[in-house]
Amino acid sequence: MSQNDFSIANQGFPSFRTDLNSSLQALASNSSGDTEPSTTYAYQWWYDSTNDLLKMRNADNDAWITFATFDQATDTFTITTDNIDGLTATVAELNKLDGVTDDASSYFTASGAFSNRNLIINGAMQVAQRSTSETGLGNGTNSYKTVDRYSTYILGLGTWTQSQDTDAPDGFGHSLKMLCTTADASPAAGDRMLIQTKIEGQDIQSLGFGNTANTYTVSFYVKSNLTGTYILEQYGEDASATGNNISTAYTINAADTWERKTITLNVDSGAMTADNTSGLVISFWLGSGTDYTSGTLNTSWSNPASTDRAVGQVNLASATSNYWQITGVQLEVGDTATPFEHRSYGDELARCQRYYYKFPSASRIGLAHRYGANGSCVFSGLYPVAMRAIPTVLRTGTIEAYNNIFTATYPVSTANTIGSSADSFAIAFLGSGSGYGVGEATTINTDAGTMASDAEL
Amino acid sequence: MDNMNITSAQYVQDFDGNNASVQAIIDDTEMSVPLDPANRHYAEIMRQVDAGTLVIQDAE
Image (cartoon, rainbow over all chains, first blue to last red; front, side, top):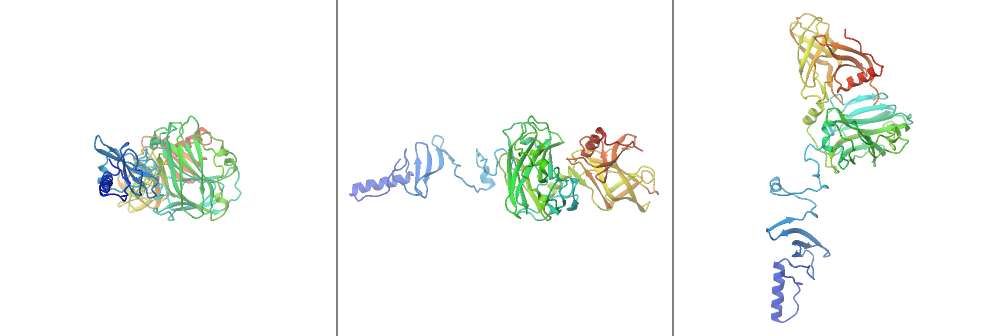
């Protein structure tokens, strides 16, 4: 161990030699000593032999930066991570590390997963099986219109066009857009408008509902011409000891600008049932009458008065051409909003098809067989993805059956579900044609109509 | 959310004569609704039936 002030005094040769050797030994030993050197320089090394720490003097020469801790018994060392702002390493290099402990403030959360972090389906608004634009949405709208997994609820509050828009923040291709086409600047007390998405209870077990120490984080990108306060309300559909609603205000600060918002909550004290029914409902309020705004905002899990649910919410219906857009919706375990987890279109489509499957619109999408009089036939097959529950079958327009013997198509007047499951369908088409026998095959044409199966929450 | 607008509902039978689904007009759309309580349309139909505001017609 040796320390020196690294300043050779004007002295006789023996003393000079001693001073020089001391300086060299101090350099060679990184100024090791039980206490810091009495004279310090910027960027100087010091091995703190009391605590076995290797330190470097900072540029201002007024503090030490600890670099590593040494274990002189085992001849090993540990990099001190407190001051590391970033790390660049290859996968192979990372795999050599042992005992790596992550930091909750980093992108790798202490409690979250590296992949499949995002519990929201279609958070980037990539999939829109039903339609990419729907106009004239107004009072009484209560269904899924364009982007998959997001339903629209409007009571009063003007008329709207909803679309899957290509305007999106950097790194995204789409957003969901609500555009006001008829304003309602003075909503009635009971009016309201929300965009909702729901998650199955069995898919959010990782949030740890029931243990209020657990946290989760919702993040999203939002843009509007109308700045101000907006409300995000969350509703646990399962029973809870304290109630199951909580509202959080967020602010759109700048008009016509994409902003990322982050909301972290502790979970409710009530457990979430692990089944295929709705577990957590996430509602983005866009406007409301006083029935939902005249109280005090409900910022803790409870069963609030209606007047506490959307306090402060701006009225997006206040003027024609007002708009609100959202994308990059993410819900994840823990208190950190990690970067949005992008998934492929195919991956997201398959996830959406668990809730809604649109049959291809084309001729001869599959085979059916005639089973009775009047041209009736049964169209059966497997769904590409097992659906959440036995779905409702929807039909619009003309569905046709066709075979080469009949040499003509006939329209299907009804499409009845018979014996379907969540995995497969058996749909009885009741037609009016004739000319081929029971058991004969026919193809199904959907190019003049649409058919879909709906197992949404 | 408020009620769905259900303007008609009638049972449909399978080949064995058992009720297999409900043919319904919901929010102006023709739907074939399975008898599955986890299906949101069936759940709403039964809620309205229980409330006395909807009657499911027998199959033809």
